[in-house]
Every structure is written in C-alpha cells, then in structure tokens.
Image: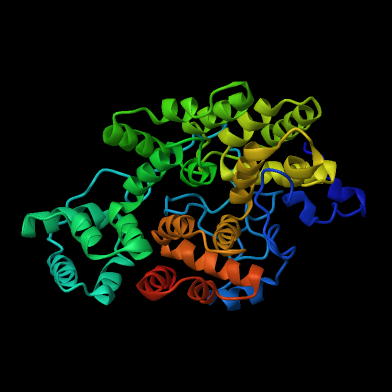
Length: 423
C-alpha cells in the first residue's frame, strides 16, 4: 500500500517557485523574471477559451495527477505518435500486461505510395517556382502532410525531371529559403540534417542535439539513427560519443548513449506504484550520494507517464519538485546535463508549455535566433493539434499570441511562412 501524505491532515505547501532555480549556469535564462517555468496556474475554462478549444480533463492513473494541470489534455508527442490518454494501464488481476510498441510518427515510417499522384500540388509548385510566386509556395507547403512529402518530391521529379528542393533553393533566399527547404526535407530527414549540424565543427550544438533526440519515441529514434547512417554512412551513436570525449564530458557521453539506445518504456506500459516509489527513493539517494548516472538512467528509460508519476510522488514525499532538485536542490547537476534533464522532466509534465518556452527562447533578448526558430517551428508544425496547444500555452504564459510575437520578430515572406505554419 502506498503511503498517501494527503490523508495525514494539512501540511505545508511545497516550496514556492523561484526564478533563480532556472537562471543558474547551464540553463539559458530569459531576461524577464516572469518568463520561464513553471507555467502560471490558470483556470481550465480560461485556458480553453484562450486556446479556442473545449476544456477536457483526463482522469489519469488513479492516485496521480493529470499530465497538464489546468490545461486541456495535450498530445504528448510532437509528431503525432499514438499514445494512451492516461498514466498507463492499471495492474490486472492476472499480472502486468505487456506494453505495446508505438508505431513511428507520420513521416518516420516506411514510405507509402499514394493511390493517385499529387498532380495539382506538383503543378502548383512548378508554377510557383517558375514564376517565383512566394505566396503560392507558402500556401502549398506550409501545411503539406509529413507522410506525403517524400511522394510529392518524387512526383515532381517524375513530372519535370527536376529536383524540387534544388529548384526552391535556387529561386529563394535567406531564412525564407531555409524554412522552405526544412519543410521539404520532411520530419525525418530534417532531424537527420539537424543532428549532423549539431555535431559538425568545434564543440557540440547541444540545443539542436536536444531538440532532435530528447523525449522521442523509440520508433522515431530508431528511424532517425537508421536514416542518419543511410545518409552519411556513419553511426549516430558513435558520432555523438566522439563529440563528447575527455573526462570532463564523460557523463554527457554516457547520458546521450542512454538516450540513443532507444529503450524507453513505451507509453502503453503500466505505471506501477511500487516501481514509482522505488524510483523516487533511488533518485533521492543518488542526489544525496552524488550519483549522476543513476538519475540519468531512470529519466532516460521511463515513459512520460512514469516520469509524471515519479515527479508527483517525489514532491509529495520530499516537499520539493523534481525539477527543483535538478536545478537548485542539488549541486550534482550543472551545465548541459542540467538543461537536458530539465527538458525531459518538462516534456513529461507539460510538453506544450515546454515547447512554448523553447519558442520564446528563440525570440527573447537582442536579435532573433532565426536558425533555431525555424527548426523548432518546422518540427512542431507537423502536428497541427499539438501546435494549437503550444499556441494556447504560449498565450497563457506570455499574455500574447504566438503569431503576433512572430510577426514582430520577422519580416517579409519569411514572416508569412512562419505565421502560416502556426495558424
């Protein structure tokens, strides 16, 4: 039987959120102290009104909270992989049911040849390229389905004996070109491109690397690794490990090795209270004993539902949030490891709010981080349901519309394309 502290009468509330917890070394703090984490508590009805969606609260796994406190239940995968709406199936009288492996997200699985050619889209794009009609390019590509992108490019080549990506690269320029080409690559090849980009040159671009590999399903990670090898004839695991050489980076090398192993519990796996209690005890003992690897092992191998349960139970038992332990309550974590673990926990607790904060990070301060803004918006736009949730979370957090924010940070056809992806 799990001990439930709520049955023991009133207790002191958990420690209040402190912005300093997220402005320490290694995490990119935003200049406004009101910008960051955790999300402000907003009435469910108000969130639903701002997001223009009917409010719905999941029942969740008995004893644990729903994934997003105060929000409409969100799609926990940015590319639309099917998952359970609850915290995992409860234990059955005859034992624990096996988990079911989630299929690859749209655009990550085998290419499916459509029954009909995308003739209208191919002709429209050819005319748009021929006449450099940016409006037509935006209207045809901003919401083209991920699962059909490969077939669109193949049909264009069959029809005109030309490469669509090359034609668009030749006819457009600057960030508008980069955004269009990122869409044309499709979600899988764009991840492969970004992964290679993160590892090129001196040092590692940890932001890009984290965007590609963290909080991903096993099926999608395996697809990314296979496509990376097919594209570059190199192992993603080996390249990431070689980018983290030396004794000072040993922990990060082992961390990313765990992530790229793609052995997370599936979202269909049950949340077992006894196992959650054991993980909470192990994490607490590890933080006291300066054992980084044990904490990494747990957070990189559990499902989002299990991490939510761990975070809830940890706060109930120790009166401090799991994120506060990573960022402030322990001196064990710093630099890139602190950032990566924080992103994993945030992604499990409220993926839409985490993604909204990551978008604001691209636009906050002096100058827009356009490359990062493009890659993150393109990644998010493949799942329009989730994009709508991100837009709603952004409005709750920053009191302004994401489209309006993008409008003020960009210009020209580049602005129009980014806004079209969000709207």
